Image 1: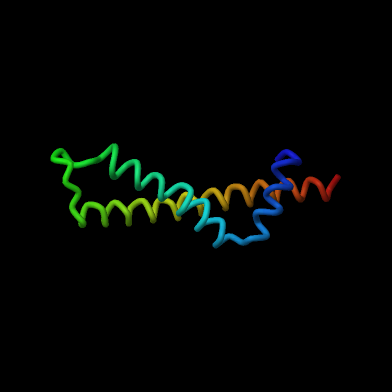
Image 2: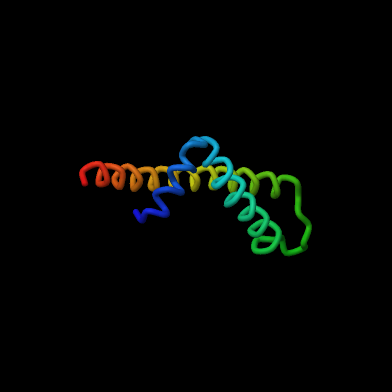
Length: 90
């Protein structure tokens, strides 16, 4: 992990895992994906969006956003801890 990324992650992780997952996963990834996939890519043939279609899509993309945020947190945290250990050994 490069020094710049290491320092940025140090500041990010201070805000907490829950905040990261909600902001970066749900809002920054899940919400845009919901909007794009629901209203542009997978729009119904007759262009009539039913409330059930929108609700199901929202739930799917919300769960996907939370999962995305969690896995990004987990992988970045793993890299951070490895870099931290390397810095302490040096």
